[in-house]
Image (tube, rainbow, N blue to C red; front, side):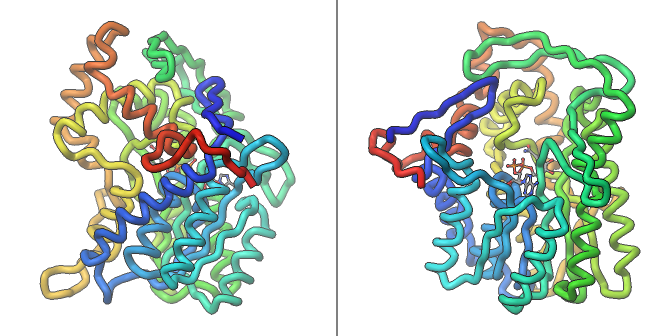
Length: 399
Ligand SMILES: NC(=O)c1ccc[n+]([C@@H]2O[C@H](COP(=O)([O-])OP(=O)(O)OC[C@H]3O[C@@H](n4cnc5c(N)ncnc54)[C@H](O)[C@@H]3O)[C@@H](O)[C@H]2O)c1
């Protein structure tokens, strides 16, 4: 069939198999071109990525495999194609990754399971044993709206809401180019607790406990979970809202894990990354407008980065950096013990320009002040559409 993007309420319901593969290969080529810059001595050898099929997880897996030559296991929860429904983008992305890894002689396995279950943890441990891996890097990059607690069987739903007060701001529908006023009422205590349950560190800790018990962690293992802080004006809906509470829980979990496994030399870190476009980016109020303006400013300054550029910097300049003599450089951390990759986004100059644009944005000047086309292009590319070199008039076999 001929596939087109099917967008409903800022969600894209279709994915293009060849386009998703091409987008994955684009990221692989990006890293391959930088392979010479990666340390051959300071590098991860066995890497687990939980949430590996998209966004920051996929980019991290690509940097680990194609930059550092690591064997990787990637776990994600994607939908396979059925009938006339395409699979989800990550279904095709994982397949493209495994094929490219095999072609490059890199050991890899992709598992499609609900990461929150004990079964997924057991499956990863079994796969690691089979492949002879003891992980020296475990990346936790899940973004999920729901989680069933394995201890209680209760399904928890996360929400993106402010705490204690209503949030209001301008938001954009990037597909129609219309601005509107968005208002989100404060979360209840139950919604806050549920969001922490889903997006906080509880499951990250369960993973590390299972992997340690399964004896598939190497001494000195590093584990990372990803976070976002964002500019001050977004704090009421993000950092000081429900999702911020969950991210705070990740910070606490990182400290707890490092202390708990101190005898093994494990270090758990939260890495605060830059705002990029991923599958859910278009549905969070104010984020598409902020991100579009941010892209405009950062592209003009020549310091714009996408997921793969961030992952590249994470591996080369943060996790496995070395000095001119090849000596290990300790991972640079902020005062809270976090890795920061959002310093360019949050620099005073960038934020001043973003704020100035946002203060007088209207539908009339939207396209001159905001990179709406760039946002749309990235959003479509995540779903395999609009990717260079792909023939979109050709019939696609979704299977
Ligand atoms: N997108 C951003 O701008 C941004 C910025 C900074 C930090 N982050 C953080 O990075 C992390 C990853 O976000 P992303 O934007 O890359 O998301 P994404 O939607 O692109 O990827 C999420 C991944 O989680 C997997 N997943 C979801 N539910 C799962 C489940 N139950 N079991 C197994 N896998 C499951 C998906 O299959 C996918 O691989 C999140 O913690 C997010 O807060 C994102």
